[in-house]
Length: 177
Image (tube, rainbow, N blue to C red):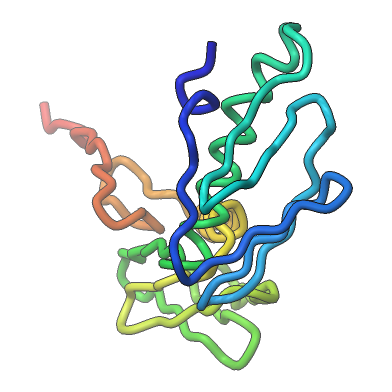
């Protein structure tokens, strides 16, 4: 049995949740999110509470039960509070700046790296700290991972992108004999 799936999800006062033909729509002060859910799990909404119950006991519905609960919780949190990830760029000569709907980066390559910001996300950059904000947790995480993959932190000097709070394991360089 799923611990997350068994819990009742409480809907905040300033949020509305609608379910029509498997399409769940969550609207809050920060925006609207929609997601399609399969009919294997029945989703019922009554009195500011959402309950999830699997229709039949199979291995697939057992795995979907908690996943669907997490998706709904993330959608409600996103439209009420929003999500934020911070990336720190370290390295001599490494720069990042936001120009309209594009991010222009100097990452030590022979050319500047330009990345387009997806719709629904806001990206700000102060010095070498980049903040990615949005209401969709998956979109914020995916875009920050895409940026980090452009220049991962290397273990000798720590140059590259790292998440705020991430600890980069450092290696010792060559020793003089």
